[in-house]
Image 1 (cartoon, rainbow, N blue to C red):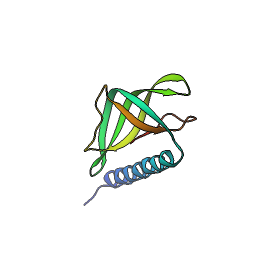
Image 2: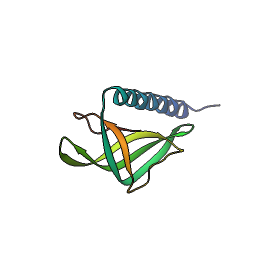
Image 3: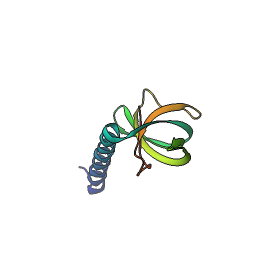
Image 4: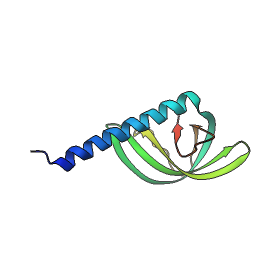
Length: 102
């Protein structure tokens, strides 16, 4: 017998995955191409089989300014970025809290 909080947790997880996928789609179509240096990976957790949610600190140069920011993204567990690595990304200039690592 499933308890109500486990069912509620599964629905919240599914909603969170859907929201991440919507952000990734938006970034893919409307985001600006840039490069980011991964400074630190703070946390990761598996959202879908084969995909993890990452919260990372990155350094991004946008419109001539260097921005250090903590961002959220979802990537394949086969190609997790490492600290110090420079990766190609997509980012929105007006909302830099989410990135898409290409």
